[in-house]
Image (cartoon, rainbow, N blue to C red):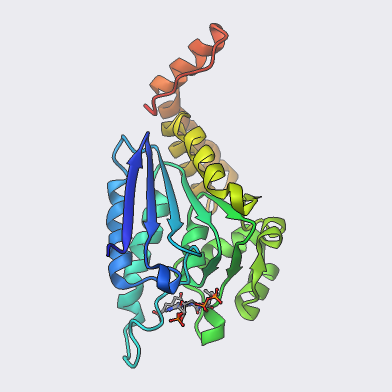
Length: 255
Ligand code: T3D
């Protein structure tokens, strides 16, 4: 059985973590496949990526049985996570995490590294790491405090409570919560809407917002001007203007 399913349709690449018997626990093989798939997603025909889990949940984090009884080098092991997290963050197109059921440990870290999180009403999020005596990894120490602030990040990381979908929404961990029965359709709808947008510009917006996490106002004003040069020369900008003049909806191509 393939541990990562890939489906490409209408500019949307859907990546499905596929080890449902373990709630898609992450193995070295799955991380390598994810890393490869994210690299391949930089192809221009891919305009949006959806990351989801097969079966009854999103992802339960690192497979806790993969290295049972072994003393592993975390430094080496975490390189596999690093390439996935850096891949997600650096991919210049929107990435949606579609979270149903559990998102735990490094599974939650991967969801946090995506650009948008849409949660099914049955979603349950937990940092999980401290329950097994580990610190958060796979970028969670970067993303979590930026999303919820230090005090809440500390509490979530230390107590590892189970956060239900509505609470996750209130905390700012997810963008929206949708009824479980409408989840698949809502994810597909959002992905379609994004895929029909000026996706090259979305990629530049992602770059700008990511850069702002470690830049001064002066640096950002400089960087915005640089990126606007690129957006301003895009075909989609011309199309956007033309559509405005002609009072019609734009037909963006992602170029
Ligand atoms: O060590 C390193 O490599 C360093 C990197 C660490 C990164 C991390 O991600 S550390 C955190 C790892 N994840 C966890 O600690 C979460 C463990 N799982 C849970 O807390 C719960 O399973 C869930 C909250 C995710 C879901 O709970 P529930 O009640 O819906 O399901 P369940 O019955 O606990 O799990 C269903 C099956 O999945 C079960 O198998 P079984 O008994 O039916 O054969 C369970 O053992 C398996 N499973 C769940 N999580 C994992 C797992 N198998 C392997 N690894 C898992 N992480």
